[in-house]
Length: 256
Image 1 (cartoon, rainbow, N blue to C red):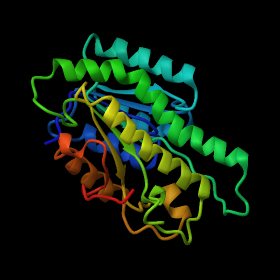
Image 2 (image 1 turned 60 degrees about the horizontal axis):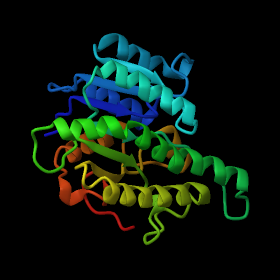
Image 3 (image 1 turned 90 degrees about the vertical axis):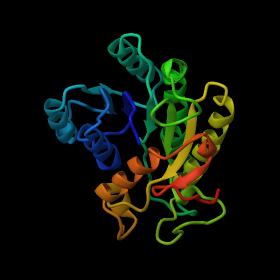
Image 4 (image 1 turned 30 degrees about the horizontal axis):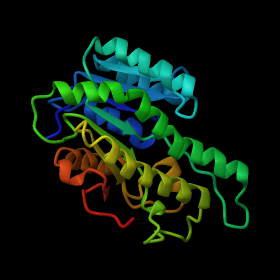
């Protein structure tokens, strides 16, 4: 069962990030602290998030641009202050971007921007929040690893699977695929680097979901609600055996 005391989710103004925050906030055994980060908390696109924060105590909106090191540091400082000496149990690197492209039309600028958000961003965020994750792991009475103790969840995509070449048509998006393949490797590196700290690290494909990003690629078969329900259920079952792996929303292995 997923029972973290504190969770931080990036990219929460819409789609999977917003629904993760909603479902976490409405759980019977909900976390004491839910830190919902987004690029423009005061903007019109964050209204649903603001409504949730007004309704649920302990749901804190934090400004965060995952591609800006100074913004990441400021967010980590704010969360550290809010936790008052406690650690962070679960970090969900969900923020991402995609630029429509084909092999012929891909540009260095697109490749660089997408990589910066989808691969470098999770690295920066994980580095900044590592002290809080380590503190949570050290102070937990639980043996082994779990998402209730200390974990980093990187929301990836099967589109980044080199082996499967998932959904090449119609979603060619070369820069997106390369960035998610890099994120998968980053997850593997994290699992090796943070094993002694007992921090579980996982890459997860949420499915082809009916988000704004998913709809652009065609008729997505899964609702956001269905995807997030399954993701949270899967997170509650993961142990150290899963650290460093690439799974889907149901916890089934996805080829690298």
